Length: 301
Image (tube, rainbow, N blue to C red):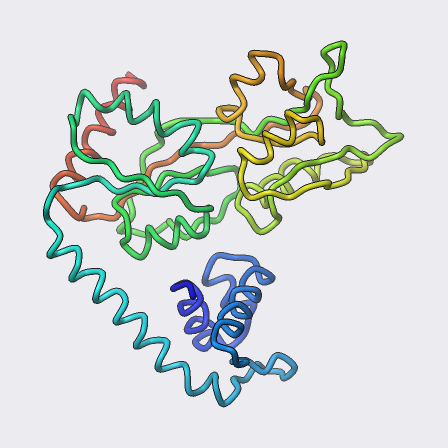
């Protein structure tokens, strides 16, 4: 059972319908519905009467509402107690999208090391919506994530600060043929085979909105969905299809000629942003934020 399922159920009860609850939780309605179904499967009973309008709860759902709130309160109360008693050493806690954890975070952190020394750094990864949820719940000090064009973010809150720390692009790539041209390229005679992120994933939504909608008459055929960019890259390297991937994730493969860019397709810009909740949890977290500001100032100055 996942804590977010409890949050979802409580918000569903408060909002009164799936559409508003999904919007409040910053996920698509199909994804939100799957999460409520997962909670019901784990409990072994239905919580919602889905065939009635307006939505109503089952008897089990009515009985579980208060219990869900109590469980959430207990979980976060225990977490706060453990944080207060676990002071063996200070650490900086990050959560980042998987692609950034591989392509951006190591070199970025290495560049900052001379400023903040040997403080312990803990990095966890999560897909966008899960990472945002953990950050908002106070589980980490910092969130590192992509911000693409036209993104409505739940992070636009007064107590949340942000720093633009880098930039990337979603580039369309394919394994080359024997002549160095993309093996999978736009062709009106045949559908373009695509390896893509799930539609309810952050990058999947972005690709749908900024890339696929601009293909016009070009037909395309999704042949694989994978939430991990590294997985999509591995399949692209085997020649299974074309994929939009962060340039930082495929830079080496492009330089070595293992992958080539499809130049006629869009490549939207991805800003890389670091977020923190103010005030910071610790003196170390506050000092690290200051070092990041210094680094950005040095780079832009």
